[in-house]
Image 1 (spheres, helix red, strand yellow):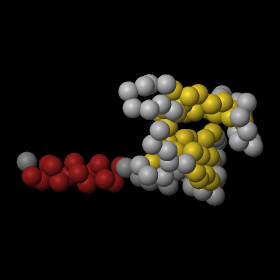
Image 2 (cartoon, rainbow, N blue to C red):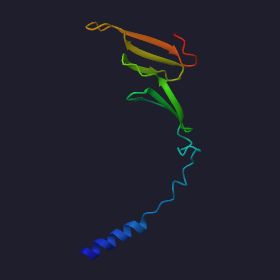
Image 3 (cartoon, rainbow, N blue to C red):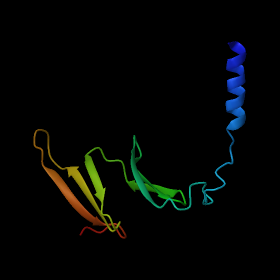
Amino acid sequence: MKNLFTILCIVLLVSCSSDNGSDIDTAPSGYPADLEGTIYYKWATDGILKVSLPSATGGSFIQDDTKLNSFDVSRDGKYRLTATNASTLGNYVVKFTLSNMNNGSIV
């Protein structure tokens, strides 16, 4: 039984090969070249960050703010909607701001 298991493991290892993704066109960043778009994500103490693909460039998108409830980006990437808790304790007023992504001005 032990020999059969060893033979099966060897067959599986030999039959599996790696071509290092040679059939995938990759950008200099190592990501697939046809993978386009921007990923936005929240980091614990750095606020909301972004990374654009396939170049893998990015940085800070919204600075860390404890009053920031959420954000959204328009499909065309021109506008950003942020929701901020602008209230005092016990009062749940939320302030919405629509900003231009190019220059940061409030729309």
